[in-house]
Amino acid sequence: TVLAFIIGINNATLTILSQLKGRDDNQGLVNYVNAFVVILSIFSVLLGLFGFLFSKNILSFLNTPPEMLDEASTYLQINFLGILLLMGYNFIGTALRSLGDSKTPLRFVFIAVVLNTILDPIFIAVFNWGIAGAAWATIVSQGTAFLLALIYTLRKKVIPFTVPKLPKKEEVWLIFKLGIPAGLQMMVIHAGVMAILSVVNSFGGAVVAGYGASQRIDSLIILPAMALGTAVNAMAGQNIAVNRWDRVRQIAIYGTIYNFVIMIIVATVVFVLANMLTKLFLNEADAIQYGTDYLKIIAYFYPFIGLNFILNGVVRGSGAMYQVLILNIISFWVLRYPLAYFCSSIMGANGIPVGIGISFLISSIFAFSYFQWGGWKKKRLFSS
Image (cartoon, rainbow, N blue to C red; front, side, top):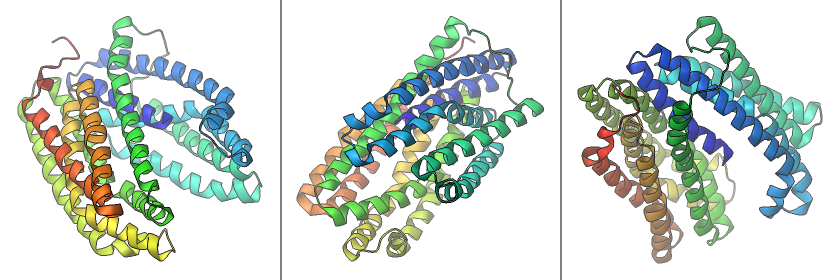
């Protein structure tokens, strides 16, 4: 949930900085980078302290089994201690993307992943730190990537960092105005996922295991669409800032075409290899069968969830965060959860992917309708 909120805040970063880049407003970039650094640093410290002090209380509230409480609390406390590194690591990557550089952040993500892969077994087994070792491996990996990213950006001067100073009121107001609904968007999504899990749980262990495996595969499948959504967000923001609506429309059209081409190819691969992919995570025959059925049913609905990422990304580029929040509430709480519940009550467990898939389709119609006829084009973050 915390990570989801951080990602949401970074969506606001992407929109504000991309518009300033489009306006060629160098002083504005300096001011808002400073404002983000100050606000995110304060937020990280406060959140880190709160999480560190109350980890055990939070876990008790979530009914964590008593025998797991101490280790789980240790794991959570270490992660909260490193939240400033996580926030900084994500902010630099987002700032670079907003300025048009999506390759450099990929290198730092790669470094973090490789380091984590190496350090996990060393800290857990060689140093015998157990679950705490897994947490420290994550913190050290992300911290290293953050420091390398910071050194790179300072040397190359690609992000206009300055000595931190108190931001202006209007800067703080705009960041919170966009950041809070953007953070809530991600929390709405995660809460919706948990609600659907409550439907899945009612069908027993095999369905739960099969659904869990399919969701791991699902998280990889939607990455291309999410990446395209991030790209069009930055590109649309730069062009909206200078009223190049012809180019904004082109970005939406090409983003949609790329999405359908890529996601249909991905869907076909998933449909053909569903059984093999599910077996990577499961051994039980019933669970493998459900995971396979789930992927085959939902595969060709993925292009429509991709369309949501594209159109919402363009709309988000204008700063219309509350509007995208409402679209996400409709997507998850008006469509996805009720349809999964309704279809599963009629069709059994296979009704879950049917309901989710139909929600992808209908929510893309809502996204298109708002993109085409909504008032997001009138949104202005900065005076002309």
